[in-house]
Length: 585
Image 1 (cartoon, rainbow, N blue to C red):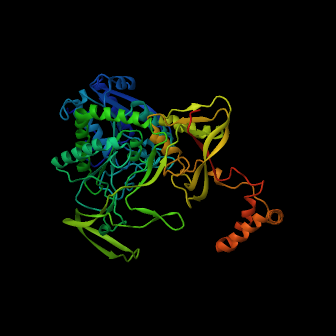
Image 2: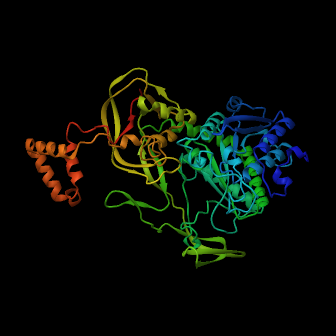
Image 3: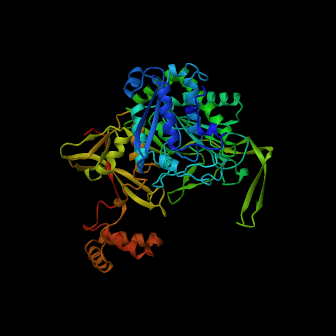
């Protein structure tokens, strides 16, 4: 079909340019006008600056609402473009692919079996902040959008905390349409080499173990087809273990749920991280992304019903996770406890294997500018790199899920409840005060705040333990059951040591700040009175002075020894406010 209204600015410009939001609106409207029975164009939210966020539902099944999709069990393939607007391959490839599928030139019959949910430009504000140097490490287009939102948030770090209005709108869209497979369409950074696309699929390394075989099959079939179509695909994101040093090799990343790649496994669904290579020409990258989209459409059309059954089984399995062990963090470089009890990177390459990687010849010479070694690639000279690959995945954090769920105290409900609602997590409001409830509370013994903000928040690392306690729960508190299909996500959000929990993102930081402190001269008097009144305490203090030289050398620690045992000590200090319960409220 040669309808000019359906062609992208990328095509019209010979792939020198990419369009703006007005083009997204035009193409969406024209697709819906040309194929009214197969295309639904709708606004699913507004950006921080008030721009419309556009999505397309494309299918020939006749199911154009979330309710119809669910009732008829239509597999949904989601195409997420523009989470990083400088990486516009997904937007242009998505519009071209949908046009070609609708006019029957590719993936024939796929739309009779599946529905495609297409988000062309997720980060609409960043999409409109255009410039020639927004992606300096990328070949084309001439001008691109900006990586972050107008609030300077990276949306691909926001899936769990859901700070951005754009992300909350996206989470509501996901919860409404429940995509079986989400393809998150990106462009790499980094080294220069021959491969033109990487495909990383989950749940291969995380999530429900019963989904992993099908996820591996999805990945391998997609990679095989891309190779047949002329690409050199990778099954991992090619992240150098040491920045700018190809000899350091690669380390597989198991993405935590702040990223799309780690988020969808917590929902018992498949995700495909598609990364075309930034140093390939724009026309080639769009072609590779088109091939990826069209292949995914065919795979979901032929195997989506089987995958849908597996995912629904995983939903039921998740409802029984109460009291079971759940892995919340992973490493590919094994970490072991140090003598001090904190995790340290052993940089143990015992599990590394050597791979032959299709790179380019390169030199590393000292720079007269920076004084460091600088890598210069020669893309005219292919070279096999024999380098280590670290892809043995091991659990770093395993917790036992509570028997029934988590309790958010009423004082934190206004902060937490809207985020849970955006995720689609089921909650129950506690209607009346509950007294004498057996619960588990988490007391932090070590709290480390980040030295600088990350994504607008001061992150927090907690070490501590859960202990049983009898508590009173006020009316208006929120009970979050684990007996729901999103139980894995619930644990990821509420276990305080999980990498992307609400606690790790600093939503409870005030709980770990000491607010009332005794003047030292008063503390000295109280400590003397306590020692005089309690010989056992005096002996304990003397023993600690002798055994711990760091304690003995710290006046503040010595005073705190007594203050922690005094009635004036704040029992809520370092107490995580969310509780675990083994019986439902």
